[in-house]
Structures are given as C-alpha cells and as structure tokens.
Picture 1: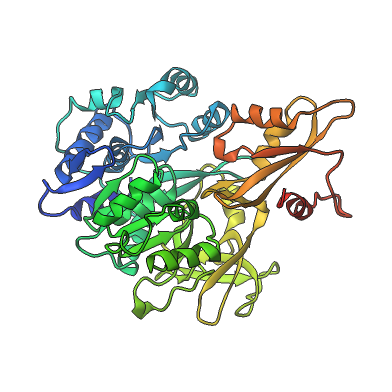
Picture 2 (picture 1 turned 135 degrees about the vertical axis):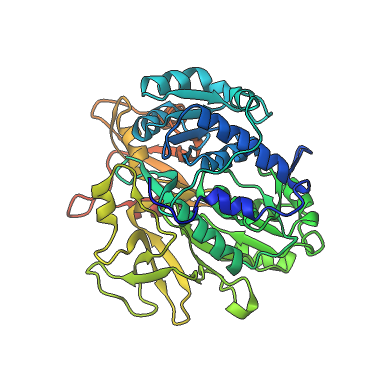
Length: 510
C-alpha cells in the first residue's frame, strides 16, 4: 500500500462533482427509468460494501461481461470506490476469448450476464476465481440481490495516483491480447483536461449511446458527464431515431463514425432537430470527409474529431472553443494540454512538419504498461519515456495531427479494433486450411470490414461461407470477416512476406 497524503481514488473525484441536489436526475434511460445522484451514490456504496465483506484486497481484479445498463455503470463505480481494478470485457467475446482473459488476469470476481452464468462460472472457478455473480439489464441478478443487504453509505478506499483503476485488453498483433493498465491518475487527469478543453458547462446533458466495455463509452463519455455533474440520457443500444429524439433535450453527443452515418440516413436529421445541441464528437475510427460534409450541410454543426487509444485514453482533439482554433476536417486536432506528441522515422529521428512517421506520446494519461508483460512494455516505450503508438501520421505547421495509416495492418470496424493476426490464428487451425490472410476493405457503414483470403491444403477443399459460419461460433461478431475468399496462393514479395496491400486493392471493390 502506498503512503498517501491525499486520496487520488477516481471515484472520490467523480463523487465530489455530484450536484448539491442529490435528488435531481443523474441518468434517464431510453426505457423511461430515472436514477438520481443519490441513487448512484447509495447503489455504489452497497456494491462496494459487498466487495469489502468478501475481504477482497486492494488491487483485486473484477472482470465484467454484462449487457449495458445503469446497474453496470454502478458496478464500475463501485469497483473504483472499493479500491479494486475494473476489467471490462466485450459482450461479444466467446468462450476461447473469455478463457484467455480469465486465465491471464486471474480476477477474484467475475460478473456476467445470467444467460452465460453456467459455462462462465465453471470456467472461472477452474481458473481460480473466487466469486461469480450475475447481472442482467433488467435490474436482476445475484450481484444486486447480495448487494441489497449492505449499508447505503461507504467511505471510498484511498488510492494513490499510480494505483491501478482498470485493465483494458487490446488484441495483440501476434494474436495474444495485452492488458493495458490504467491508473486512477491516468483516468482522472484525462477527464479533467477534457472537461476544460471540450468546454463542459453547467446544464450540459450527454446522450450516452456507446457500449461501456471500452475507453470511448466507459471513460471518455461517462467520466465526462460525471466530472461535470451532468445528466446522461442513456441508450441501452444505439437506435438512430431514439438518439434523434433525445437531441431536443441534450447538448453533447459522442459516437463512432458508423453512428453518424446511420443518423444521416434519418430524414428527421436537420438544423431544427439539432438546434439544442452544443457539441458532436467522433472517434475510435477515422471519419470520411464526405460524412463530415454531409453532417455540416444537414445540421449546421461541425463534428469534433479526436484521437485516443486504450493505452492512453485521449491524446489529441480538434478545438471545441473558437478561441482555441478551427476544426480541421481530416485531422484529429492538436495534442491535448499536458500531452507531448512527436513523429519520428524508423531510425528514431524527428521528422519535419508535414512529413510522415511513427507517432509517439508522453503524458499523465499514458498507461502504466501491459499486464504481466514487462518485456512487451519495455519494447513499446522509448528510452526517454515516450509510448510508441504504432500509428503513422504527420503534424502540420499549426500542430494539427493527421493519422495516415496504422502499423501492423490493424482493421477498425465500427469503432472496434480487429487484429488480423488473431483472426488468422483461428482460421489456420480449421480443417483443410494451409494459410490465410485477413485484410480490411472499405465499407460505407462500418468504415472497414474484414475479408479472409484462405489457401487450402493440398488435396483439400475449403468452403468460404463455412469458414465464416465457424468463426461466428468462436469469435466476437465484430472480429468475424464479412466474407471469405478461397485462392490457390497468397501474393508474396521477394522476402516471402504476404503482400496485404495487393489483397486490399483486389478485394476492396468486390
């Protein structure tokens, strides 16, 4: 336990921002439920008291795979309050993926949807997890049943700024997922910077239409509203018409490009329906210039695009306030206050303004390293402490950053990261498959989708549609290639490396 002069627990800071009127509405759901600030305070206290009763030592991991609900938000805040480490897992993850995460993180607690309790509890107990609870999106489950027996008051467990608050798994290009360790200080510093830079105001209301198992929805959106004492209009799932109706009573919307594309398909999207809105933010994937243009024409608003990662939360942003500059379409803006960002070539030399190279960053928001991967962590940091993002881009003379590519052939589909090496590993283990390559191709709805190109073993036949169908039972749906093409051989260069650029070009228009 670190010696503490003050409490740096992220929950303490978020709780301090609650408005004086605790009976005011904090969260209103798309199903008509209303949760007050007092509800959030008391519910998080009860769950935190349950964790305290279980005798879980500070730093214990709590793994969570549940559907989006306000109770899931309560679970996250209670985990922070109790001084434990939150480990969110995508609800689309299947058994092979869950087995890896549980075995790697070794959580003492797993909370899952009731429909998955049978197989997940067995898997977790075999891996050494002590407690498994269920939590459903209809306010039922054993977690709430147990927590309801505990007091509604709780003193947050003191934490140091560098104590872990969360672990976010990000798929590795080698096929092995890496757990990015984010501290209370990492998350709180970023929340406070964004509160100022995005000009959060008293009376702002956020439409929360994102999942809450990754950085965008869990940290950027939720922390943004809570640190400002702002009400959230809560969407269990994104529905364009619902979000559009909510805009009459909201001021801020955060989404991935896919959500904006779907909103543009709604006839009711216009200057009148968005007149109350102050800010539209987009991230998690690049937005097409045409989407920017259409949104501007239809609503009169210029979308603010920003750039972040699981390992760093937010790094750059286009300006919000006119005094900070203009929003430049096609860029992700300038480094946020406190963030150092540089572009260097492969030899480690700084490149000139406008020249392309690898993006490296440093700041209080940059993560502590990868869970149980000290060698990998060391590889990803420079000698002077900059994190090598793996993204390729350039900075113009005014400091605006443009991302021009991604190393390691990362695919971003609907805002989710898909690493081809991971998918290829599953495909190559299928009967009759000799080798495979997965590439991303443009898609109007998702930005990119995966295409698998498969070479059968000699004397074997492989059915592309069957490959896709098999993968759907093994992987999260967003990782499954949209189609599979069977070929005689993969194109290679003189060094024998598969030329994925040729495959992308070949299949992008088909």
